[in-house]
Amino acid sequence: MFFWGIALFFAWSWANSSWSFAIMADTQWALQKCTLIEATGDSLCVSADSLSGYRNPNSVSVDFIHQIQERLILNHHVKFLVLLGDFGDAVDIKSVQTRATWAQELYDAKIGVFPVRGNHDEGPLNAREFLKVFPQTRDGEMNKTPPESMIWTDSAQIHPRLVPGSTPFTVGSNFSSPACAPGRSYAFEEEGASFVFIDIFMDEKLKYCEAKDQITWIDSVLSAKPSKHSPAFVFSHKPLIGACHDDNLFGPTAASDSLNTVKFMETLVRNGVRIYIAGHDHLLQHSIIDEPGDGGLWIQQAIFPGASWKFYPSLYPTIDEKHNVPAYGKKREIPLAQELAYIGYQIVEIDGERVEITSWGAPTGLKYMGELEKSEDMREKWSVRRVFGWSSRGKEVLLAPNESMSSLSDSSLGTQANVLSGVWKASNRDFSRREFSALVSTDWRRFPELKSASWTLWGLEKDNGTSETPTFALSMGIDSDAQNMEGLCLLHERSGVWECAGQGEILQRAYQSGDALGTQGIDPVSREAWAVVNRGGTYAVGFHGTLGIQKKAKNSIVPFKKSYYYDLLGRQLHKIPRHSF
Image 1 (spheres, rainbow, N blue to C red):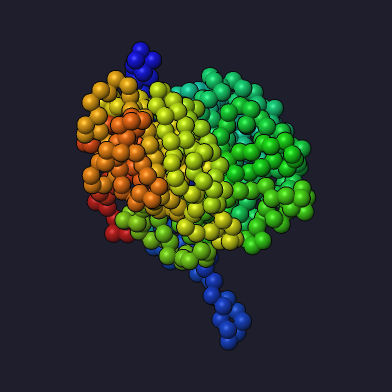
Image 2 (spheres, one colour):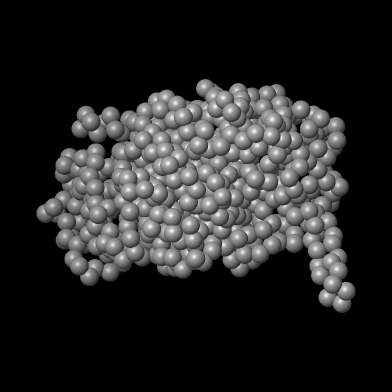
């Protein structure tokens, strides 16, 4: 009981100290929209910005950016936003300046911004402007964009402040950079977590700092983490294996530079990094990446969607098959999830050594791929598309299609959890016709009023946008000090309340093969609560209606509130302009 009491104390501490940051990928918008005139063979071109009411200036998707950032301020209360590059479509400093200008509404809400460049932010002029408008990459001090770089972004009377509107503030500590990319590649720490940003593009002196030349610096940063299990995130614009682009972090193809790819992966894995995060492909693709050799190294990769006007599918044959099979005689990618033609952003919640990533998305109306002519109002279209995570207190299990789920069974904090039946199977395939595997991660915690430890399952959902998993039977042991088992059931946590995981009568017997979905019971002989369920999330044993940790529901949507708009002098407008978002 003493050990459980310590665990209970830390469970409350973890819950009360959680914090979050956001991720947004590519934010390009077209400069022109051209229509072919068949009679003459000529093209009629108009400003693509004009088709959206002049809300997407300088090839930057300002309309979508504003809608997402509004949610970060009103709904999610994040500490900072990570930008994964390709701030605009045109490779010029106006795109960089426009994206920096539209960071001001986050600074005004005391939300930081940490960017990394993409291939559309390439070149010496953009490198110089990047360092000028995002000085926080060197010391974490926000809200210091030079006024001369804040740009009048449109002609629709919709614009943020054009001068910094509040006092500077700082996010992060222990900043560092590699010698070959000062301020462009950088790392910092925040509340025990480490963050690494890798820039591989041309600098202001026409030179490159390639990914292979940054591995030693990356290792020095990650090896200085408080512990191996302290959360760490590594970001760059290009993935290790893309979905629709041949190029990757190390070169022109997904098979480029096998030696340094292995060194990079080994550095991340050895230092406890669970996931490598990129953009570039304008879709959501979560997968496991195997090393080029036979050493058995693997790491999760997430390619996150952004808020662009163009959307790509994955290719067939896949980039993996196109490059890695000829080069190494094997496929190196195991797909876990994919979603096409959604704009989106991610919320990453850190709770001690527990990490949970929630992907939010809004449908564009396109089917698989295509280009938008105008940006739509997405405020009522957002939904949670995918939730996954990990914890040092749990384990990870890779389930192949049609594999038994029994290997998920585990024990910790005095509780045994057994998966008694169930087979993993997704409800669809990816666009390249590959079947999905499942990387299932778990976590153990102790909470008051429960009669067991709680057990969290991530990664079992059959499809995006649903919480439904394959049907499985789950049993959990009841604490030895719970003498009276009357009224107990296997609980599932929903929005801060523990509810019986099954439905109807709580049977007083062991689980039997063939029990239907929703059947539940207590086995008085083995002292286990069980139910047949089809949901992931968090389970425990206790009484129906027990209150969980009360905190703001992560998936709630706050009613839309008016944003602030400013004139050229930074004066707040009390009336939203006619062309408002």
